[in-house]
Image (cartoon, rainbow, N blue to C red; front, side, top):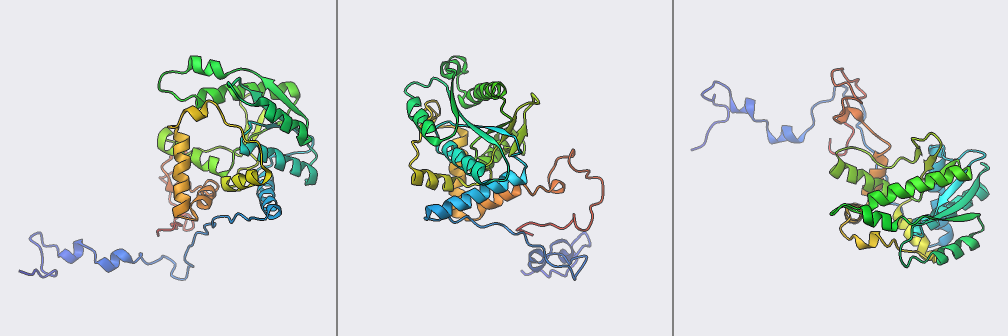
Length: 316
């Protein structure tokens, strides 16, 4: 038996007053300003990686320089420690720091530093030969933290946290002794996004890697000049330059690392949604506190302005 939707219910309320039509669910509510232009977020597209080495170098150099300028990473008179781990990212970091030193109007020094942590079988001599041929001053610091990490590691814990703390402390101390003003690390765009995801899912906070960080000691400043460079570009660049990429003996023994899992998740997202990674790095510099839950960033008791109240998202 069919029911008339216009027939009052036992409570005296018509069904049409309670259940909105499908059309009303599909259509957005009328704007307070009917003449206002619709809001569209401009999401960057996936960067095309050129096969031409010269063109790839120029694009990477542009992203490198843009990050340095956007965040004021380099200043006249700086002495920059370029941290060399032997991974593809550190090789790329040294190359583009040297290029910036050559072409930038800013006058700064470079010293490449490798921390030998005593990993069994690590080919330190291979990296040292590369540094000798690089043309920049370099130093290798020997501080065997490998066994310290293994001895102090609690069961079920990963080595990365303790290892990175020890490494950071040694590099900071080395920087002070050398009179270094900036410590350059080789983290790239994808590292920034993976760190955001790790903090989001496992630490309960919206936090990533800052492109420039003033250390608590008030002396050291960490910079990440490759913050805008996609990892795929660094992979391609390492292949072109045939860098002697060296593995980490500790990391390779931990296949279940959450960071590695996040990196794989991001690769899957990038394959499925070509604009996902550019959109994610753009989101890190386009924060809308009113649409989050942090009462320290936004007073939810106040009335938002018309401009603040417009829902600028892809699903409005």
